[in-house]
Image (cartoon, rainbow, N blue to C red):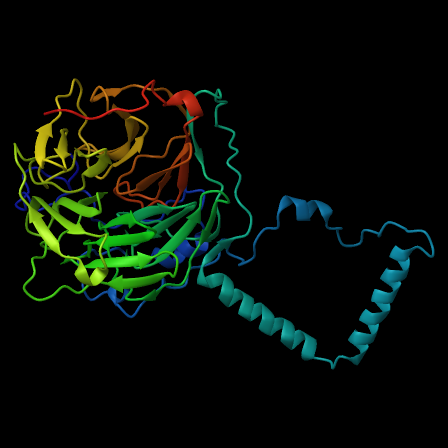
Length: 482
């Protein structure tokens, strides 16, 4: 086992040994890697415990300047522009004398000569220099790609139309840096990515990814913007994203924020004094069932948790109140960095860790009866910091850490038989990683970011589900393990 995940650690049971911390370096093999940003970032190392970091300042609402995609600060024109533009010295095709094209060109040339002759000397060069300087500052603020990078690669094998396959998304726009332990919430065709951390610290930015155009944008937020955080939860309720918990360095939160995706305004909820509040935590999970947000597990900085809290999110914010719920049956061990999916009225919990053990169990909690049940498995897989996405009657479990190393495999858990199955997947799978995010949109599953113990990723991968590749012959089902 690696040094950062010792089973004999003195911090047993507090999630401090979960393999997430440590200095990271840019990945030179990344398709989005650029030397200008790498050179600027190479002089700093990520310190998770730096509570005085300027990145954690609540007054900082955006990332610091990031260098342009290339060292020269210019963007390569698209292939169509290169093909259509005439090279210097190339004669213009001759047009017939007296044609409209020729007359218009002559008039434009005369107007250009008059404007050049009437312009004072020296002013043109100064204006051009000022414009160039302003353009450089604009380019250095964010990494902007004007044309998408096509996913063609010489090593990609041809894939039959009926098989699932991985590919790298041809993204463009204002690209976010690589992050880990962030969150993603899909609203219509826009994926909202919030928070997370990289080698420099935690962030409070919101980036939006359009799943149809593959364009990244960095919209401006207003209101009570949350502090920089990671390992929080972000849950969708009526076009509002509810963010709970998380932390940064040694800080842990139990605050609750609501982002209205229509107005892009943040709201922080303030609860009356004396009302019950869940303990601070991060690496927990949250699901919404019948208008209530259920929060399970995580860690508070001193120990792993297995408590269950709920809050009614269908009432106005000023009337929302927390309530701790008492469950029945054998309760799962305290854990964080697990996953939880709502399937009908059942919350399915997969894996996780308490800081000394990487779990291989799967649990089901009936949210109507609050009874826990353990799933009896034919085969087991240890996982923490993975993702689990419901696709039909399956959970697609991507990557994570197995207690000894980061993995890249894709596991298929059948929610009807309650066991793992094998499926063939082709293409270029994401490299081994954990602390990434995944979401389902139409017949595609997207995977963004993550961490492999030394590098933070900024790539976006797509698993094309190819229609009939995953759909079982089941139109409705229920989970019954009691």
